Length: 264
Image 1 (cartoon, rainbow, N blue to C red):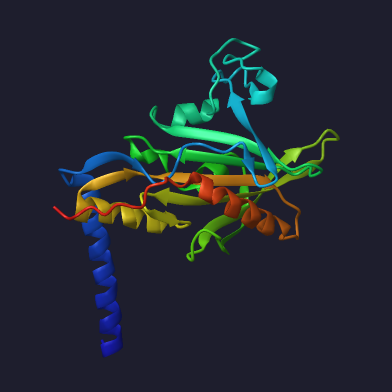
Image 2 (cartoon, one colour):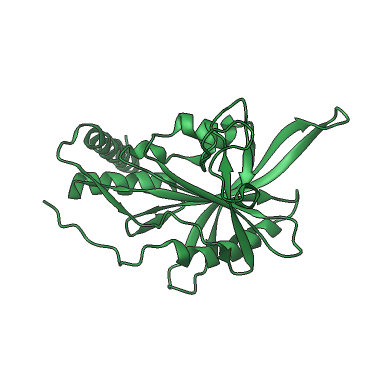
């Protein structure tokens, strides 16, 4: 084995050892304190620049499947069809996510523009498993990921840009004539923790491990998702995402600066 091969082997062993130690700490470390601190406000504004938003509500009864804009309910809190209490999670999300998960969603549209944006915030509770890779849910719902990339969005409020993961996805369905057609959408997201943001699931997991190992704390994490229709062969939706996210971003952050926790 030559010197280069030995160096590569040592590097690989170091990475494996680091992951092993991190995994052990995530599972077995005692004295980790779960906090209510989050890096985001669980609220979506009524307006984002020229986009006007309306909240979306769902019936928890799978057989009913009611879905309503707040403007259709006239202040009602129960499903007009079956009388069940409405919420912003659909039946599948209620069944899958821990009970203390926070979730808000709104639909945004601009005057004269038929393609709107669905915006969602998911905030973990005591059970941090609320936050996961969105790819898992989207493929489980029948979507095929056609492309996946990270876009960098300049922000007026700070020097550091915002990184957002964008997935172009298709889902096949049978139209009224019996032919196979495709629902083509984009799904964009990024994660937010206490004083941290990333479009990378791996980076988020690494930060969670660092907080647990070095500081003995587990903050609440959230992810923000934006979705809408896209045109096959066009990247115009990337600019739409950038424009909307850059305007939405300042409204979501908590007003206080990130706090540092001293190692025990």
